[in-house]
Image (tube, rainbow, N blue to C red; front, top):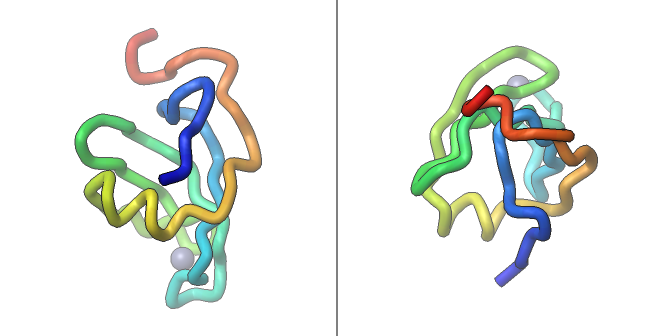
Length: 72
Ligand SMILES: [Zn+2]
C-alpha cells in the first residue's frame, strides 16, 4: 500500500490512475477520513471513495496542503 507522508489531508491535490468520465485525472481532496471526498478539477463532480478504493486508484499526490483545511 502506498504510504503518504505527511498523511493525506483536505487541500491536497491528487492524480488518479484512471481518468474521470470527463477526462480529468486531477482531484482536490475535500475530506480525508475513513472515506476520502474528492472533487474533480475538470468538471467539479464530487465523489466519495473509501480508503481502500482510494489507495488502489491513487497515482500520486501532486500538491501537499500546507495545513489541514478541514480543521482550520
Ligand atoms: Zn470530472
